[in-house]
Image: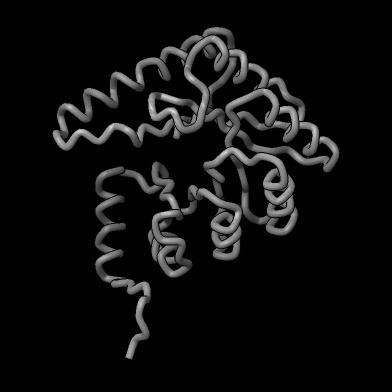
Length: 207
């Protein structure tokens, strides 16, 4: 009786997957599942039932879906540009009970978001998007990244949340080799964090 094509959800299987996430992480507060994998309110609610309250998403539409579900923390994990900056601020105004944050990887977008936040008398949470080899988005963890994060922390209307680091290009099927590759890619991130903190610039979180 189901018209095809259609998306079918098996709740019990998803609940088992969520429990596995909890077991692997060891702490629900360490989890920030990405909504782009399902884009479904029912799945979000299943995650919320076990105490997950922080989420990532890739689009404004996904961010709005999370807000409608009452998500407490919503990270738009794609740097907004042009009209999407205005749409991001509209979300903040429309859903004040959710804490929205997003990414930056250059001074231009940082300046635009900071200036608009000032005009609206808002504070905006921003993460510096760090490129560890996928070469799709983000800033390479070098001297330019050091300067960008310093600008992030000193911008009047910005809350510097920390680093966003995505290593989705590392997919070696051998676990030990994949872990080695991930650790190697992450070394520069930790060096950058240490350099910033040596100069009293706090990197609160790494996602």
